[in-house]
Length: 285
Ligand SMILES: Nc1nc2c(c(=O)[nH]1)N[C@@H](CN(C=O)c1ccc(C(=O)N[C@@H](CCC(=O)O)C(=O)O)cc1)CN2
Image (cartoon, rainbow, N blue to C red; front, top):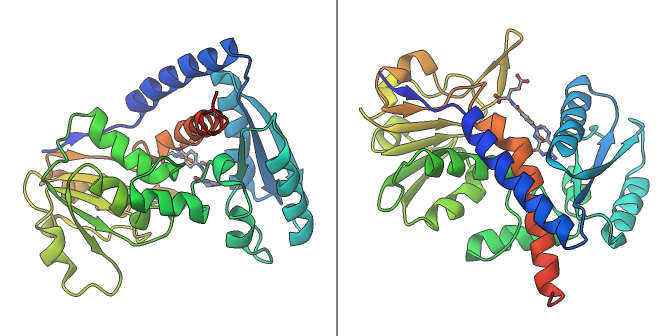
């Protein structure tokens, strides 16, 4: 029976590190500040945006919440982001997702300056992930890595199989895991005989967006399984892994809810601090 890899104690550890770093910046005369842009009033988005504001207060960040109406024009949003990019008191800009359907998400999120791009989606940051450079990387793949590293799972030389090639998790994760000297296989919706690949994984990370996709017969005995899936099934949050079945086979497994997602907000705010460090270095300070 697998041990359960809970996100809460790891998130707490990261929050303590963030608080210390915020104090260090404050001593140097910088109070980290994030702008959160919320378009529309989708209840889940309002909830997540408010919980980010609360996290800012708890961790010593200043924040500015910009709440725009559902029918906002793309041009007005781009203008606001442009102003935030130029505002030296703002160190990070986060556009709450998903955006209303009439808006081009990619165009809007990629308009955030690379150094303030806490979601790590700007082409500059995407390129830096691939080259192994210093940039801001998306929170969810960071969360998968932190769960592994902070629970003492050896990644070096291990066969890591990632299921899902999405822009926010699977694709960036390939390069982030490669940096730790793993052998990486990526599976996706067109992969033939997926189980033949997943069964070879020492570490299996799943971000496919399909509830219960990974069943016990697809997992090697003793594998470490990280579930980055978020699906709503009958009003409940479910991962991509059939938790009850896979728990019998794996040695370590992260639950949904209570695993990867719990770290997201802390890691977005940690990106603000990384952005400040990069800006300071660029300015030779
Ligand atoms: N610009 C972004 N918008 C959104 C992101 C994002 O990464 N960037 N992700 C989500 C919201 N989010 C953080 O931003 C977030 C998601 C999940 C959680 C969390 O604590 N999840 C828990 C379950 C919580 C629940 O039961 O509702 C878990 O997975 O265990 C926190 C923050 C969308 N928008």
